[in-house]
Image (cartoon, rainbow, N blue to C red):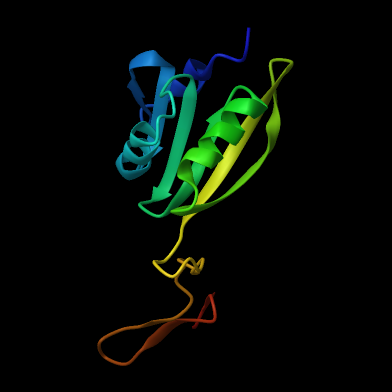
Length: 128
């Protein structure tokens, strides 16, 4: 029996859906893509950092590979061994939305300037 994903649903920040689907963050767009592409929505923990990137934690490598296949080519994906919990391997698929031309943009803020001209973030570092 693969690892039970509902164990991830113990936090007040995690929403639990039917079929042992747990979700944290912005997840609706990715759940929709997975559903439309025929990926069975059960036994997974979806962590959506924003609408464009996140991680899907799954109990088996084959489910992680299937999730990656369902997200391609709209998302760049990477499947890897997430870790070992309760003596069972847990797998993950990282995803990042691609631009219309197929490129993978950097979606993290690296520079922030306030309206008054004050620079508060430059090259990903806080400016004092």
